[in-house]
Every structure is written in structure tokens, then in C-alpha cells.
Length: 125
Image (cartoon, rainbow, N blue to C red):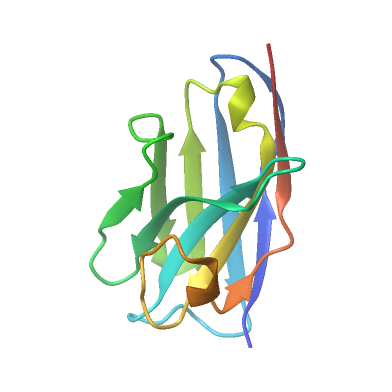
């Protein structure tokens, strides 16, 4: 069983930056794992933000965040990060991290096996 805990959310002004962290416990990340970031705004569906492959160090991003957000990971800390720059009010949402034990870097929520509880990000205009 994997437990995921996100942190780093908060209130920031338009154009600002935040870095979210997602730390796993219960078992170390496997070379076959992929980690995804999703977000959910009030009244909207949870949407894919991006993902990182634990073994290949490759990443994929949604078009809405490409060039502004960066996903990275620290193997030693069992932690994945989401660096968010040039934030916009439309980035306001609860951000979730999730693990795909099959290593799938995809937007489909059902392909992820474990989820964190989420952290709130609010971008003021």
C-alpha cells in the first residue's frame, strides 16, 4: 500500500510561483512507477496536469501548463515535485498527485492506483 501526501499549496498572486511536493510512504517508488499530477477546480472534472516516469526521467504535460510547470523527482526522498511558475487565476484548484504502478504517463484517472488527499492552490488576480 502506498500513501501519498501533498504539500506546498497556498495563496499566490498572478504571475507568482509555487512548488508542490508529493511524498510517498508505505513502499519505495518502483522503477516501473509513474507519478501524475492532477487538479480539480470547483464544479469541474479532475484534469491531468502532467506526469513523470520514475525510471526514464521523462515527463509529459497538459497543453494548458506546458512551459510554465515542471515536474521533477528526488529518488532519495521518495518525493515528486510540481514547480508552478507564471501562475494564472485559472490554475486555482486542488492539486493531487497519483501513482501508476504500471508506469503509465497518461491523462486517464483510472490508470492511477494511489492518490493523495490534495493541496489547495489559489491564484489571486
